[in-house]
Image 1 (cartoon, one colour):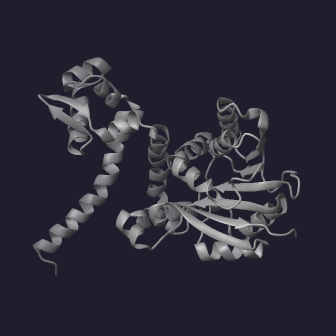
Image 2 (cartoon, one colour):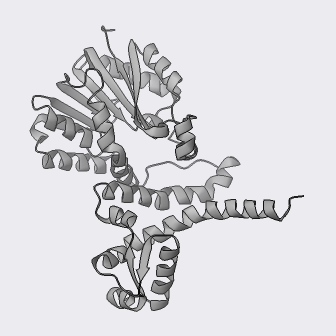
Image 3 (cartoon, rainbow, N blue to C red):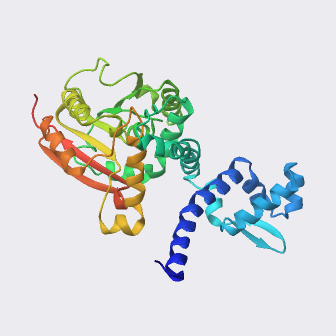
Length: 343
């Protein structure tokens, strides 16, 4: 039987598990209701904030207490203002993708968590992406590692020399836009299955003033008519989990056929890592949970294993295969492969 110290330790572990989800709920409520923004403009008391937002005083006061207790607000002489972390979510360079990730957690991950016990007992798995907003949140949220990923991408073998670029599952078009801005004589083609995201990509390319050198195709890459041996670089960013093991081999074979001799395939994906860094940063648990989330859907599959992925690429005809980290602990990594000869 456990003693009082052991019981206290277990209760602290339970409280820590609950606190993360509760903090996220308080944080998102303040962002969506624009309470943090009001306090960033001018520190206020509970009564002043309730009057400014025309909101119930008791709820505003309770939210302020909770946000302060979670370390999201500072208090001085009865007035509250956001901590730097909240300012980052309001106006930082990564604010939009970070808030999209927070929305995705609240609106997609948490509801799935409630269904997880039944799913683990054999209930039919849901289909991911039936809500158009879900796909947009994923596309926007993936930009949180975009700066680091683009920096690594530009250093991969063959990327700087690529002049014909194909982005499969191009999302909001950010990667194509960045490469076309940097390489002024390059041409780009994006393929995106979701019509709402297609429009986001076209808007992004227009904003970057590279739309005359790029087209976005609406459809399934595995079914579209695309030229063979035509591209110097093919991108697959954070979409391998839409393909099962056999589907990935077929995908890589089709990419191989689209690439010109000497062309490069660049795959960005998270991985479940057991490295020291992954354990220290908590990335191992995060990615393992994300892998569980993926597998809990009828139309999604688990995260790839690096050694298996390299073998699949070689089976598809690629000869040179390598990888480089984007974010520590497996949160993001590039696996690259080159075509040396036609099949």
